[in-house]
Image 1 (tube, rainbow, N blue to C red):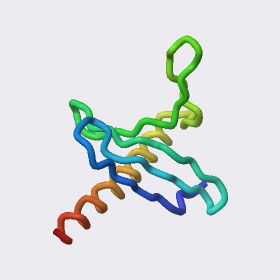
Image 2 (image 1 turned 180 degrees about the vertical axis):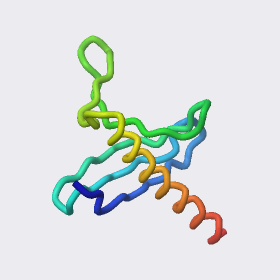
Image 3 (image 1 turned 45 degrees about the vertical axis):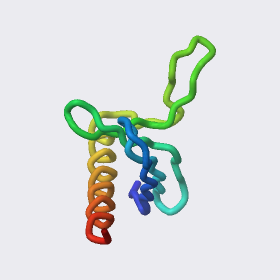
Image 4 (image 1 turned 180 degrees about the horizontal axis):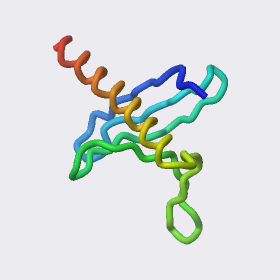
Length: 91
């Protein structure tokens, strides 16, 4: 399964949430609302989630193993950095 498109939508507000991401796989499956969050040790991704009746959050879609999660995070954060560089050069 290949990532065929990544779209970054930056958030223009103070706080840890930096952007929302839409990822397309094989031009036939899409995941919306992946979040880029700035943490203490740098940026990371958070998969789309839903609040349960107990108040806890559960991922709606997520990688099954850490290797794929790492690869997915690396690709998304690389695209995010390119987006930031593009915005800086336009200013």
